[in-house]
Length: 295
Image (cartoon, rainbow, N blue to C red):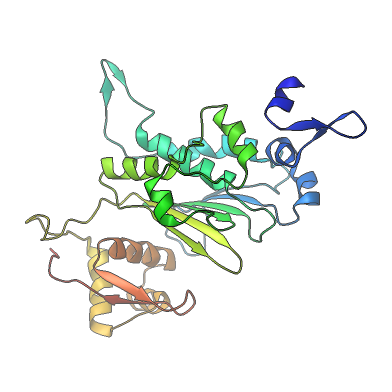
């Protein structure tokens, strides 16, 4: 009891008995009890590894499945290894031992912890993590409590769920001192990845962190090397050049590729600074941007 009280999971009530705190309920309770206090509470992990548009996901874990507790602690333990299980990272040795826990593994755990500890479960849509071939998207209810600029610089922390962050600190995950995002930035830079994308969305309020595993584009201003694109990417790019600003569905119908495939290709081309987009989510169109460095 003393340990649970120390970490803020329980406290003594007016009846002189121990009762779970709000943070203790979220961390260690059952989802069907959590929703009494947080009707919008929902945890969702998805893997998108299929190009078949009829397959919405290839693996999924949700807090309301009834197959497990549905709390945040168990969610973390169920998902964290899936996030890092198939990372394509360089082989490194420490003496004669292989280094399996790299700075990238640590950065993904940090991103996961940040997503949980900054979630506002009174907001709609819940916590959603989506893993694709080339990126992981962390989406949590509630907006940033500090500016993006301060988050990227680090040194300042204002976690929404401070007690939950403390609980994760005790198992070696999460940084109270505001070094979480800088750690993620450093890992991406070390592996040559694009800088992570961090932004807010409103009504409902949500925070999005996207870690892109595509290698950062090198332009002619940086080196004499040219950007290489695959045959499918070239077809999509050619269609956009010939037809002007285009929607995903238009490209998919014309080329015969699935919606999922087109979205992944467009995401890659945006990262390569070859195309850009404009418009709302439902009416987004993509247009050619930079054709000087294509091979």
